[in-house]
Image 1 (cartoon, one colour):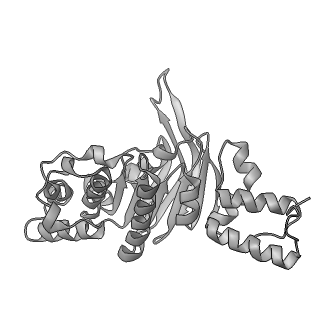
Image 2 (cartoon, rainbow, N blue to C red; image 1 turned 60 degrees about the horizontal axis):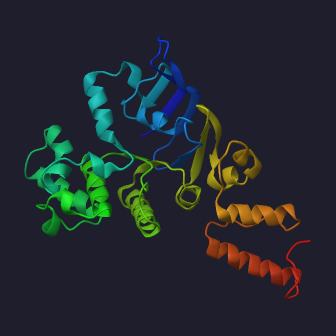
Length: 295
């Protein structure tokens, strides 16, 4: 499934004295199977952008095309299909849970599509399995008695039970501790590979984006600021910092060494690999113990 935005603009309260431009002239495309990060300073339009991808918001001007369908002129049946194919998980998705049992919460979406038993139970069972939840142990429990991490997985299972082709995650690790964030990102990576999903993830954690995605879209003041492979984008440190964006620690360290005369770094994602690369370069450069790495 291909996503194509053509000069997308969105203004809240358009035509009134409260009008506020949130997106201006955004053109980009996402191909099937990509995993794309969306970053930018607070108020840059990230959430507004992704809410256009399944028709929760419609353009003030421009077009949003999903699988060849223009959402601005889509029929009710076309929009229903789009919302099935493009699953959107909001920030703090556990706050969207409302049913009495985990089963009923996960089943809510596909049941509204007209899916009946026994296929409905098969979908719920499969979706819970996909996010690492034990169906037999948890399906009949209240979602509100689970841990926050489990509740978040229930919310995602409810989206997966719709069998989407695209999974859009808006700040999915917000409120999680470091261990929870790490486990959740591992889950996203596994889901993408196992289910052959296109994944679009909004995050202000550049470390997470750096390690997870193939490509980064940077928004600034509602406009497209950068769009490219993750390591190429984060190599543009001065431009990112000029708009108030941080960069991954690995990138900052290697960029700082390069500014002081070191050779360009390899494709390094984790701090462990960065330490290994720096250690090898120290040996190659013959730096003596106790001497500074740079002058």
